[in-house]
Amino acid sequence: MSICVNTESGEHTFPCFFKNFSFPDTAKHQNITVYRACSTHKIEYSSFLPSFIESHYKAPAGLTLDDPRAYSVSTYLRVKDLKRFCALNSKFQPPWVLAKGEITVDSGLCCQTSDYIKGKNKRPNSHVDWWVYEGIPYWETFHEVNYDDEL
Image 1: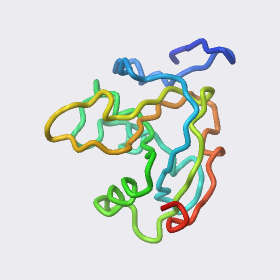
Image 2: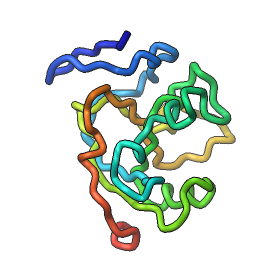
Image 3: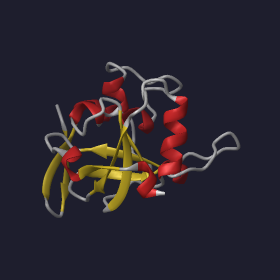
């Protein structure tokens, strides 16, 4: 069973496993430009999987099933924060593809992670959690860009 959401542009659905968590109060529909590292070296669905699917339908390491971050597609507002993440994550072997694109009001909800995750151990950065609707080719709003041109 999917979770239905009514928006100005019509009815959309989230995947059924979204029932495991509550959206942060700061999550909203908005249009913003973000960056994503493509682990498959291509701009395709497989490079834009929500964390829960990437982790084979389990909570990603360090997260629980009721944590909204476990179900989002990770994106960044700033390239330097994305580069730092890729340097720490072994699945992003150089040369990984840098994608730039739009989160749109018709693709789901999003918010900056630092807006709802607080604490002295959390270093603020430009990470954006994006909870995408089912059945929308959201990765198609992205295109490959050169890292040096985006600094």
